[in-house]
Image (cartoon, rainbow, N blue to C red; front, top):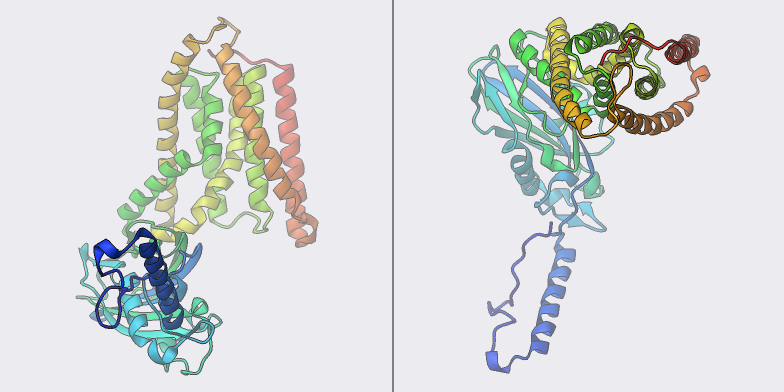
Length: 465
């Protein structure tokens, strides 16, 4: 975004002023061209220029209450500070000798005024800017709170340091006045405008000791830094609810359950089997009882796509409750690993209430599934009435077959794409235990899917229309 620079002559008279009747359109265009050329020259000489919004920004922050003050240390790339003019020298080096005022303005404009911290539910007043320091991109001080604090309060970079301004890291120390370091604190980051995609790593150091790490992208809303059990439960119920509605693969899997079965009793049985299964693997994965190899997540995503393909094929061939609930249970185990990968980075938001967070997340997932079923069932019933070919008895509506074909087609593309990603991982080159897990898991999943498919094709189940 370009900086606004007044255009005019040294004597205060605008170059466009003059006799209106004597100025031709051509002359006006020439004068405008000269004016904009002068602006460009001034920008290049003074360093007052605009720049594009950066695509990826990483923010690192520490929050620590101490006595009657709360300290917040923040490190932000300087290139994220838009609408601020930084003094430059040479080919684009930050002029450290003249940069103090602009760095202070950038810190307050983009961080101090945007971040909101609350004590016992009341928002604190704007912080005091205690220290600002320009750091090199290779500076490792923000690995711990102590080193980050010492570096930010330490001596500045030598004025002769030559570093391009886009590579400079801005380290800032803010201090807030609080009543007690034992209060209940929360934070609304408000830093999502620093870039197209802003990733934040926030570390909270409570007065009682320990450290809690929060990682999020964009604006996560208000974060309770030391939540109570009911606050953690409410947040994770919402997380589980939105995860179902945002996950297209889980939505298609649920749609495959609803397409052939319109009776509530049948859907309750299937959803219950799915819930029990994914709860088992979700808790196991959260407790670290799964392989940590890089190939595991692509494996899970590939099998999730395969589960949708299988359900769509069974809907077309012969859906039946006698075998469907076992297939749903088996694939629910895999979907649980998918839920766990999405939940892993969110667990610190629950504080010390791990079990409460897990149970609340499952409740949110079930509420989301219930909403999907309640919306899909009446829509499908109306849709089937207007599609010719609906049969009775063991015959299935043509609409159910058409929808299953469309869902299966989409999932097949996912299966091919995710399978290609999985193929790029050399499972055998990992540790022996990882290789054993990988080969055994792949073979087991292939056998289960093949057995279920064969059973579906050879033994039609009891119709449940």
